[in-house]
Length: 413
Figure 1 (cartoon, rainbow, N blue to C red):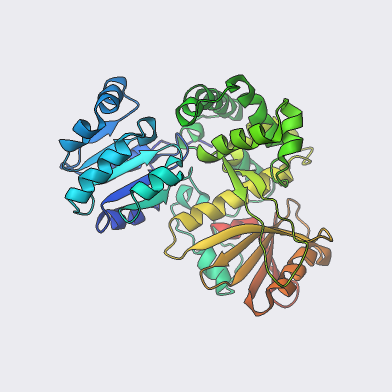
Figure 2 (cartoon, rainbow, N blue to C red):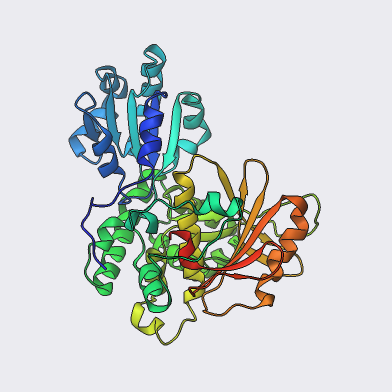
């Protein structure tokens, strides 16, 4: 699997352009190398000069005099703005005195604008849009309507772009980073991911926070990969890397800010007691997760022991990407009851209606695979729309009232 960088659409582009038409500042956040710069340069016009804070001279100029740097700009794209956070207040003063929409298009490889101090400074002036690595819909140039379909209970068998068995595994292990997908083989993609991790830890971690144990970050990331998809237990994680739980939680938060890790919060309701209260920690890119776990295509053809957790993160990532360009707003969580009934992913819309998704790496499905979804349905009552088991097959099968087994490819086909 190889592609040419820049040849695939980014479906959040419409949202960015729409936001620029009515909002003073638009911020595109996403992990490094997810395609933010390419998208920003495509959107910028002749009256919107481009400045990258990866450029040492530009970064020093902006850092030495942030107010002066912004004062001379009418409109601009500022790439990797998290590298000089002092610019945010200067941008606030600029857009307060000149409130035309589309003044600044910012990009950043970290969710640093979610810190209370910076978020409050631009409240009411900014639209924040996330760009994750390429989705299967973008790779197939076919905008998926999966999220709206499941809330309308419309599920059909895939007729194109069907992926099962080894073809599905190849796509999951490849991940979605555009540059990694230009590599012609699995071992070359592995090398790209290892270099990527090294660069993130050496540079971007330091940009986010001045931590005391930078040398411990690679081991921590490796440990998080081993525990991906499990309930977050910071004492357990810390004991594996020689940290206390407070430091561990702080350092894990850095990886969240860099958009490598996604904490999937627990779903809650007043109708049930003793639900899990801890988030699950997932990687946002299955290719990165696979490399950290040491899983490659050839061994996986004979032993799929490690495939389930990677597949679960892959599907969560696909759903988050679909949500990023949707006009609707969706909330994602997981469900776990005291009796161990659980649902991998719970999707809730703005009206409180719920769809549950259970992920199964095998080609067979049975009634017992719906136990968690039945518990979720009971907890939701009339708000429960649909329960899906997504599995490695090409058939869509009914399993009772509002319960369906569907191919994983339904997400993008």
